[in-house]
Length: 510
Image (cartoon, rainbow, N blue to C red; front, side, top):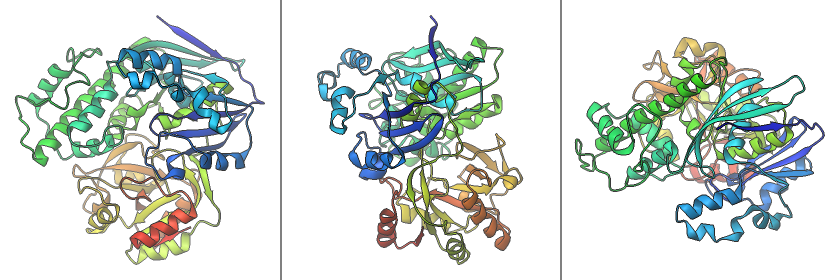
């Protein structure tokens, strides 16, 4: 059954969008179509994936203006019904986790609550370049929904219609299954899914293993429906064809099969979407599963008109919920929307340190909204050194199988990488490196890289830094990873950067 929502644009509104009581709490402020601020609470509290909001985030947000309307990113009462069904009685009977009660501490009473997946669809659509688009959203769970397909279009009067065409509901959740498999491999669910994705590159494809997993966890091998084993029993599950021997190889092979199945299921949903709206070739994609950049690359090769907001998970829902109430496309220019470290971007100091072969941090300008460091809160290095990867892993306390990303001048990207898209300015896609022998530090074991293309329009300061490095070395890219240590949020303030430098001995400029 189709469900329709229609927005009515209201230019004058100053809207606060909120996401909390969930992993990765965020707040966003828009004035008309201008995004004034969007930030993650974890950067202020130093609690990775912090589920709560606090006054430090709001104090920073208020520097950029006030609001006359506030909106919560999901339907809290509908969520309660699912908690009751799932037997989560502790959550169900807690009144303090209702937004009207929870937000009293900040003097806020939300004017609106919109559904979780509508927040995802809105975030993806209203930041996209499209007037009409198919929106695919896949995550662990909203209130009840775990995957949705929408058709969204804006008419000549700027009224936007969201028509929900298909949904899959709890307990049928691809995202929950991927998280459960993350836990099965000894990792932390709702946090370490990206590590599972990296582990998959080290595994071998085993057809018999994939078949057994499909049969155990899914109702069939070709449809969209999943069976009751989807997110239950993962902890006790042990494949008959490949018993758990406790080895890293076993974990890598399971990760490989998990990633393979996930990619196929995502593609099934996109294919289904294409049959529902055959006249539209524009796609916007949201939900936490849209952070899987390996799968994204395969989608983009088949559906090239693909837009993914840089913060597609629940963190981006504060912006999506605000945009839905506004009812218009936002002025999306870049993802630098958070805390501002004042001062000139440290190009010369950073360049000189890089030319010495040292690692160097940059903490300058406004923080990125989303999980990727894109030049303003980055730890950088020359990508050509054979020992750089080991040095970086030691500093960041990361597993050796974790890959690092290249930030490459956009005009050189296609010479070095087999790109699935023209631009990848938000590190959302992987590409095969054509010369892994020249750039070992940014190549995964399968010779792929999660590429960030950098142009003057995306981030002129970071572009100029890489361009100066190119002039001196002939290498048009840098290794770029987030300025943080495993288990800690990305550096936010100048004081955070100073503490990083003191603790880990790596120079940080800003």
